[in-house]
Length: 264
Image 1 (spheres, one colour):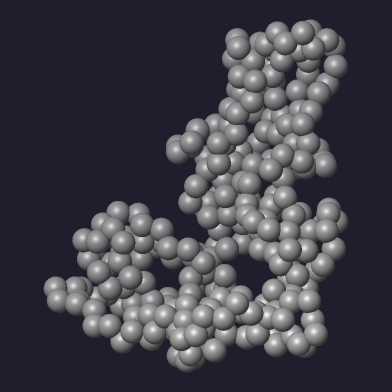
Image 2 (cartoon, rainbow, N blue to C red; image 1 turned 90 degrees about the vertical axis):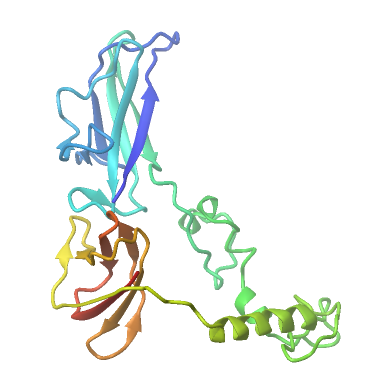
């Protein structure tokens, strides 16, 4: 779990601090009060109308918002917020809306070639949708000889260095060999401990995700955790959090019966 820190200096039109001004925190575009924390670690959630949510004599305000891993009052990374306050010096209400508190990096949509559409949220991506358009199909595509690109697919079993490919055969060959050798390389697990348990029902957080605290008693801050569905399929957890040398918190996206194996 984590709480995201937000702070702001509130000033009047002349740049003077707004002292001891009450501040409200809402969900973006509404007057629905958000769940916030008044401390980075301790305490429970409170509504934004708490009387002690005020600026100090320098106009400074600070609060924390729980992420989706919080068991109480957490929000998904896509949630935006609004802060609102009364400027007593200038006699007016002021606000900042659509605040990105979590500042997430979002995946591109490789089937979307339109640039700048607000729904794309290109500013929250490493590259825009337009830059990544059809990348996944172009990598393995043999284009016509008369095309302006002339890009050929990579042959992972050849070592030639050709200029008509996204990466050379040689680099692809080396990468493929590394992947193969890594999968068969021996791993020394001498002295390792194993803890196994079955979870029939997971705990539910306020944001709708599922989690379970696993006390493995292996004396390891970062053990290897493997999840197996009751059907026998392996699957990856959403998040694994160390809660000490003998405990981890495992997050999943579905409340399903699972077998957990911890190696440490």
